[in-house]
Image (cartoon, rainbow, N blue to C red; front, side):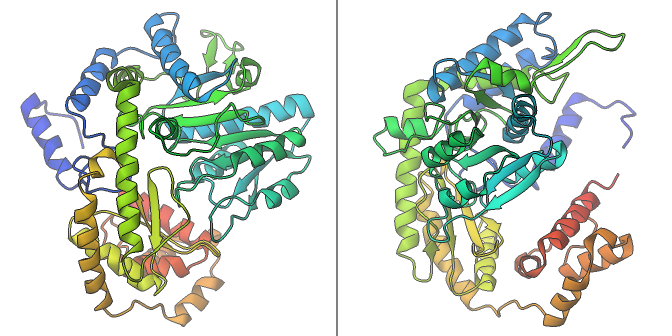
Length: 479
């Protein structure tokens, strides 16, 4: 669309508000994925005002805008005090993906400089976040999978230790893992890594700002941070259980010597000398300011109270799920995330997701992966504290409705055809035909009920899933 002709501000804002009408709600406790709602009066207004104060400040050069350094030092210092050890250094980033990408770059460059590694490998439990695979793809690392226990869903330490080679530059543990909300055996993974001289990263993007306050609220929490011997870096998102607006994370390192491998510096051009701590160069300081303001506003006692509320909601949800016939909770969730499956079958599980969505609840479907079953995933926040009983009541009614629906099946002939396809050589017309068959129109529209689409996707080989989903997203961003 062209920005001309000029329009009144009120009219422009009205259009933006109307666009939001089709989105899932980000407040109110009915969207159990993607959003972290603290349900604190005044917090959203404070974050918006703080962002506005610094929206035009360029975070590229802290020598011109010294407020940027002050805010970042305060934020990273708070994260280091909560999760670090003496000497811990860190950087404010735009989110967990950037924090992870920077930690992977740091490990790659550190191994190249100190061990001469030129064919770097990244050692990942099967439940490690997709951002690690993204980082490996961007930065040229080979990913090596290690299994997780199919009952506890925690990383298999013995398998991980056995998989370390002279080319391994980084191992990963999650606190907790996103798919199932369980904490990996961090101390054991870190010890196995240190014994081979390999760096170890803890992905605490979700739990980093929750687990310490759960411990403060009296809940048992295993050691998982930079105080654990062998842990060399850690990522923590402030826009999750820190309740800042999206675009706020911190990556921490055991010391400044390790962090220096994260930086990019270039003086070999006729412009100004460039030093970038992060992937971004120019960036608004607004996200930094709003995250700083939120941490000041909530405070230590506030975070402890919010964590206790999440833990209480989790207790009630887990008890209710385990009391519901046919529902199986996966693993032992301990940090705000819960996943459950229906052993009766994938079709019923995805019908349930559709029935819940029709009742105003969004639970995130997660497809199967090897031995790990498909499931529905929930993210608990303080806004869900008073919603758990209503969700459980609707879930039981939705499950009755789902059981009355015919199962979704996939024609074996279609699966045989899919197995013969090479995703890399599919042309646009072939991709469009497969998308249409799957119920994805290629115009960005989604069917009202997703069970038939997801059952088919679950049955397809992962490379074909990836190609189709990338093409579908490309059809949404079609210009």
